[in-house]
Length: 154
Image (cartoon, rainbow, N blue to C red; front, side, top):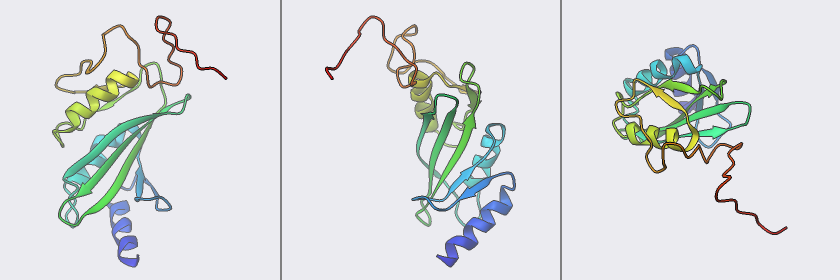
């Protein structure tokens, strides 16, 4: 555990604008949305634990904001870390792509765009993955499907 604390202190120094949470399953770094790409690049090239594998990338809808969530692993040390960034503007939610750092992010980001409507700046091919262009974004908490209304009995 002490070694983990040293590691997280070292990461905090490398990314001084992050907030750190360690009371979770994996250590979390919370960064401003405008600094997400920079923080991701620091982690990807981190000397002791290069986080070379993007395990997953998704979004969480909190109604008042979205949170981007990136699970990263160092395949050299099997260390996991979570990188998070809040997007305050629901109507124009956007963040920089990380597909230039991890190629698998290209499809993860397309899925998040398709289901949440979050745009990724500088993405090489940002288009819908599953749904029609005019369908809406079904994983948003305020999504309503007026055509295929499904009601469950109480």
